Length: 475
Ligand SMILES: [Fe+2]
Ligand SMILES: [Fe+2]
Image (tube, rainbow, N blue to C red; front, top):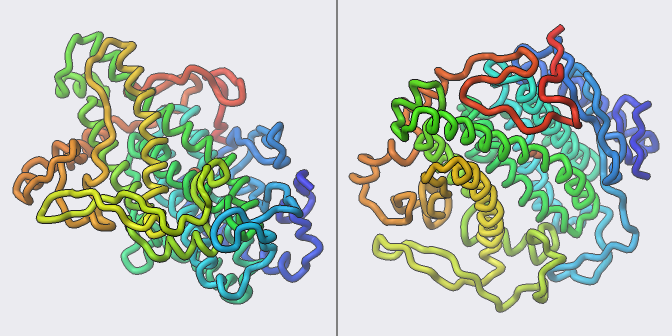
């Protein structure tokens, strides 16, 4: 059952037609979703025909089909990876038992909370990115932005399906609330901090898709291990879509860096003012954006020590990244993990029970993964003969959540006073001046094959189309 039924109002591979009550409930939610898309989705895009991929099957080979479609006609639907009737819980206190096809009563509140928190991030990012289309650096990039946006919309559908199908009245209320909160709204904000920040320009968008969509990858990977089988199967399919979002971020930053390096070589300078005057983004600004998005994103993993994290793991709700590939006992009782703590104004390492430190374990896995791409950006600089290197800041830099929130830290990992922080903040995080400069570069470039002057063209187009393909028809 991997082929998707597109003949129904809501495309799905879950035999939705056999559950009339659920089908009706979701069909009632559908117009509210479209209303949300019209209200706070991509600005001014209603008449565009966008070269989008749509899932036709959840098979690894050939799940995607590309075509020019209007975004509000995108076939948002419900796609789960194929089930395995024999699947067993493979970590925590229920290890070895059959995976759950329904929600056990005692885990209902926690599972609902996990699904709502994940679901809330999906529409949030669409809202954060809604004005970016007006200042796209090319048709190619505009298309990528829209692809990310429609897929985040589909991720919302994925979580709403679980809420409607498994959580009754509460689930339906939560699904409605997902369309009512709004990113950055003072009265009814999105749940997590990073999803209430602005994504004011395309450099921020690329950093967001590189770092914050990667948080999505790690959260979804941990949920893909869940004993609650429908959640595991849903998140597995979401992960295949997430890969493209991180590609957009990694290649986007890489192209910005390539263009900057080219200008630096042409002008034989590393003077930020001269590089800016030539219309490229100086590497100091790129580093400050990186510092901001990295620190805000690692906060998303939550407090370094958390009894909830222990409960979620032991009860089988949420595993670790690549749980199945780990060689330990998958129960973790009596094991320890090192976390950082502030003592007398200094950072010290401390051993704590591993079960309580699972947020930190996931954060550290994320850090390893995200550092790898930064290395690939540095190779662009290396190849161009530029000695500057980009780096992720220290884990304790600019943290707002957990034990490290109580300390001021330089990006290199030196504890600093409030006075030094205030004096150096604009060297470490994007300043009003940086934002104004990057904003000044954001013009709209939409002629096929043309690119804004601050970003290099990609090496290849999408779906083996040429770079100057008509990715968006403006109608
Ligand atoms: Fe997503
Ligand atoms: Fe994403």
